[in-house]
Image (cartoon, rainbow, N blue to C red; front, side, top):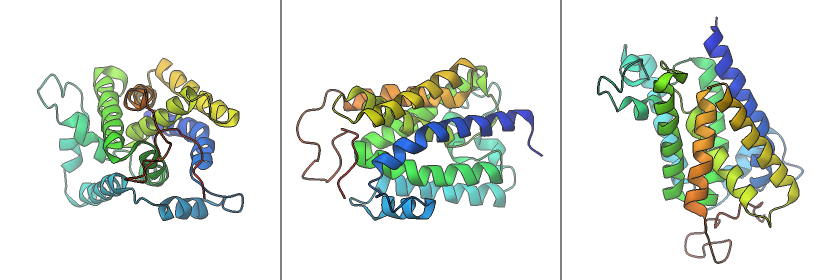
Length: 241
């Protein structure tokens, strides 16, 4: 049975998913007839260019899920733990992103969330900036966690929150985006502030993603599409079908 801490983490994930889902669907390029989870996921992964950064990270997460169940004690060596930074175990703020310490329910939430949010964000920012946002916000949230917010555990949800936060921040900053998208973005940022106020590390990841998203995307000039690579030029408006 999940303890109080795990229930809090699941509740926080529900807050971010609830706030971020409408914006992700709006940016996914799906039509009105494509609204089931399978249809949305299929439409996201059919688009080009192929989201290579998301693919590599998602594959690494899946491999680590297998290893954490197949190799005894691996999770304890890689996840966050109290005083890890003080003891010089700095790598844990990175490796903890690949350990789903709360088990099956966390896996069921995080893997689909990364499969949806990852490609949408990568086509907005490009693979290089995507990696910076994902790992930058994830490591920042893990450092905050080690400071006392959640000193034991692991998971990629804090980095996924960073991707969603980056999309929301840039969407809100672009005044040309539809009002409905900007309202969705405000809901996501409000969720991040709320989670941060209660010292939940998902709030730290989301807000770090907001800062990184604006840092890598602002200012941007030129057309919305990069004609050489096909990536959206961080305008965060719904792609053309």
